[in-house]
Image (tube, rainbow, N blue to C red):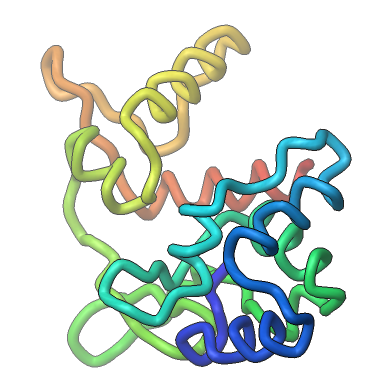
Length: 166
């Protein structure tokens, strides 16, 4: 999820609820069915306005924060959606209609893919292993000799298919 207007609605909702970052973090623990909630530092990154602020967070974090503030998720956040669109120069990824970032037209190594997806390299290893256990090849995985390479278009398509099947 991507916070709206650089987090201004989040900070306004916190102010209206009389919550600071530590109290909001504590409240996320109260509303989380698992009782884990979010750490104060993670909440600070999400609601902050400085250089260390994060524009994006997990769906779970957005839901916990919105619930703790008594707001709907879409009052504070917007989903990050990847859709492919042709432009005059290159194909691009559009996120929520606000920004465009290049969708690579080349194969990537695992480190590049991890950065592109904002996932860890171990997450990618786990996904590949789970696909292998199902006797499948992870979408976009290509072996060049003994090296793994990934087609980012195929990876995103595979992730969309998995999400819609779930």
